[in-house]
Image (cartoon, rainbow, N blue to C red):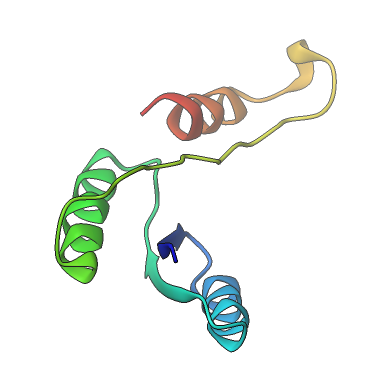
Length: 88
């Protein structure tokens, strides 16, 4: 069986996901992290490896954001947010 470490910004939603998986017998732990912050990403890896008591076998990054509308009408903050989520 896989041992999962879930990460997300929304601690409440994350906690519900952890409880749901555990109720199904899955070894799951939840860690709040904001992947827009490079330091959070680095801390996440070390915290996950501590919870797993060893190195991770695999890591999956599934995050995104989208601004809808004509590009010229989107504020600069939308582009900054997208770059932070997708690339940092």
